[in-house]
Image (cartoon, rainbow, N blue to C red; front, side):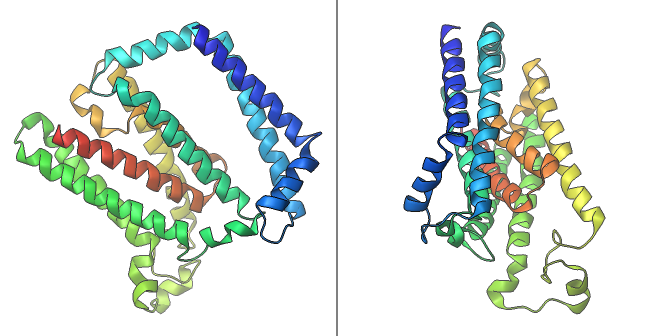
Length: 299
């Protein structure tokens, strides 16, 4: 409990520091960014505004989380003990905290890169059609699909009745990940130079052979509400597993250590829509989910 209070104080200190950097020291921060992060040694007014708002927003979050950690240290400690002892099939004590820190840190780095790209010209190579992050997103979904298909076949060979739901679920989810990969590269259109059918080009916002860019209110609503349903299902699954139910299906859901990534996906898909960022975060979440599933199938 003392450690939780120390962590809370550390978060409060970092939060205050971010407010100082966004206020009295903003000029110094911008100067350092111009010197070391910008290829033309210039930060636009939009970039300065982003830095100020970003530091202020992160500082606010850290202040709230730090204060809550200090005041609720006893309950947080009790919850941690419960998570690590009640459901061993869902929580691996050795990997839980490490996975949470790594997954959340990667998600936050991707988020910062996404919003900083408009202000720092040095990051322009990461974004755009067939740029680094777009191709990496497609590659991660493809690798995740292959890993899940492998996990499904591995579980099927064990011929265990209680594993049949996982065999089917992993196969379905792997197929969905494969479709996400194909959608990201417009089904190979830009690779092979295929022309978009005229009828599809008229209703596609980018004139490409994919479905997620259709100029249709229903498609965008399904995109957003689909994330709402998946997030709600994931949290419901975690809750039921913590209560001692669905033990055999605990691995149908992402590891609870992925909660940081899940919340980032939810925030940028529902509350503050950023389609490209959601795809990048979703690809990372898919890979971590597939790796855990494969590990279970071979244990």
